[in-house]
Image (tube, rainbow, N blue to C red; front, side, top):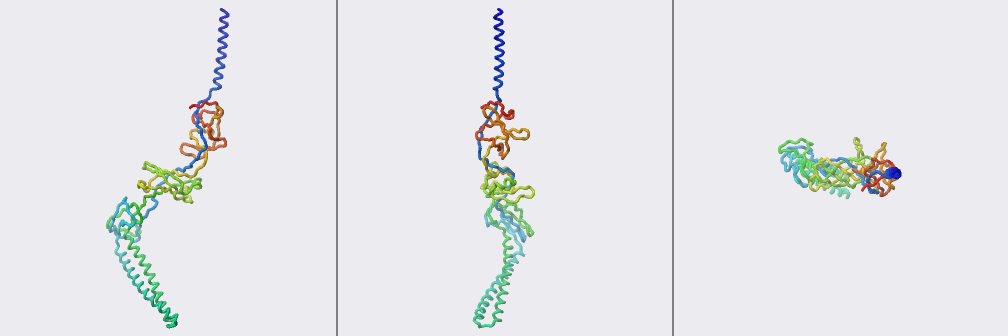
Length: 354
């Protein structure tokens, strides 16, 4: 009986010792659970994200130099017009009278000039043949030069009066849409007043700005995406113009993006979000939440030989929810820790979960 009790006690002691060693060994091999993804160098398209406002590529703003009274209005705001169509007509008796008077004077001086020109040329030939005196020749020459001067003066006056008279009939100078027309029939218009604008809305420009760091990598023709307020679908275009001088207030360089507007949905003055390609480079992009911040430095964790390795990185270009990272320790197809990284320390044992 005593021998049996001793045997049982020894067995329990040995079992207890063996059990303790097993737990210690399991604890040593147990790692932290993580998830990873492989990353490799890729072409990074750099984007400038800013706000912009739309304007037509072409528009004509009509201002009357002379003023007048509104005689006729043929269109209203929003109407489409073709080049050469009459939008509105002004009338002014004084302008018409000045035009007719200038025209009559010009035609009279032109006829007088032609007569004196022929006389001058005839007397010039006679003088060259020594058939008339020099005084007679110079008299005809002086008369001819005076007629020429009077003709040029009257022509200038006539052309000015003619333009003022023709400008009373306001025609569309391009195909487009009538905007900002607020005139009524018989309304008196003062000189230098604004009348109407015709907007060619087939092509639209979006104005925005880029920083000094981006202007050097930006070129005419770079691609851009436009997210317009109030319009569901985005539009795509290209950089049309780059101002090489920065705005003195914003310190940014204005650029204009050209986009097609075949359906006419884009209107002048719309606000938008603008994404412009400002260059490209090869590098590593990782999810922003894979980056760990410790003591104001940025780190990532990668898996090597079943252990977590901490790598200090610099931040480069940011692209929405992805971040470029820069370090001499990065390599292709590295296993980047994307879940569980905030609980890791350098050289921790890890278990990769599917």
